[in-house]
Amino acid sequence: MRTYIRFISSLTTALVLGIAQIACAQLPLDPLSKPTQDANPLTNPGLSPGTAFLFQMESRFEQETLQGGGAAFASWFAEDGVTLANGKAPVIGRAAIARSANWRPENYHLSWTPTGGQLSADGQMGYTWGTYQGVSKDAHGKPVITAGRYMTIWKKQSDGTWKVALDASNDGPPAAGDCCRIP
Image (cartoon, rainbow, N blue to C red):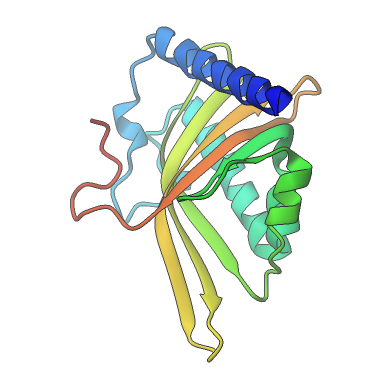
């Protein structure tokens, strides 16, 4: 138990330091990185190159998840990646994420759209946020839809690949006109 608490403490410290690094870089948020509701964020010419790069990764991540289900979803995580889902305990590590994300694409469709993001000045970390939707069927075959907001923290690995360090989500759509505003 002590090892687990030490791990959580270390992970929390690393995440806070990573986010602080991005904040301390004093990069202004790209005002054009927030597309209008009907704009395709991947074709918005006003996106900064870093944000466009993160959005392209999000698109590949989403497409592979739609095609491969939970196994594909889990494959995008770093070995020590974490998921934080609405009201659930953290799932820590790619293997644990793979065990918990055991859905098949024919039974559950998870899709999402990034609406904002930022790449760190050194190009080693970034984050995105946006909205997601999950669609499944109940016992009577009727659609069950969950939707909400998400945030993904990306980290460049030593081999040059990018992996998800943390994926957090909360159910429930934002209030009208409140989507994705930073307080």
